[in-house]
Length: 170
Picture 1 (cartoon, rainbow, N blue to C red):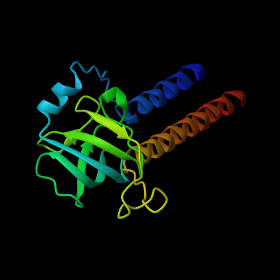
Picture 2: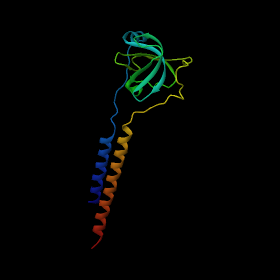
Picture 3: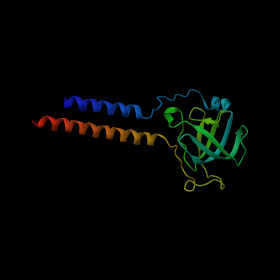
């Protein structure tokens, strides 16, 4: 009986871990096309220096505009998928890029991104002065899930101990 109770608690805990786990997209990025095709399909092409990076966006200070309505010296925010497996891109603060984007303000590996060499503009914050921010959410779920599993495991041990001490007494 004790083994059965521990098995039930373990299966419940495992089920909660699976339910509480944040879903990760199972996308595989596969870009077909040349740089010329990427430039033709882009609604905007700018050269700029990264001033802010979050989990799902990047902000560039625009240095030059090859296509689209962005203004030189303005700050341009673009949406980016997290991770290159989802066709995103790992932008680095203070680095210059030539970036293609869609009309909806999205960019990624398949849109066309090229890191550029050379000094950044003097008006662009340095990598040390710019701050990286993270989107909140997933860590809180893991804390709640872990606490729930710990409480269930402790409850299962208490129940098992009480049953065992109840059997040992005549």
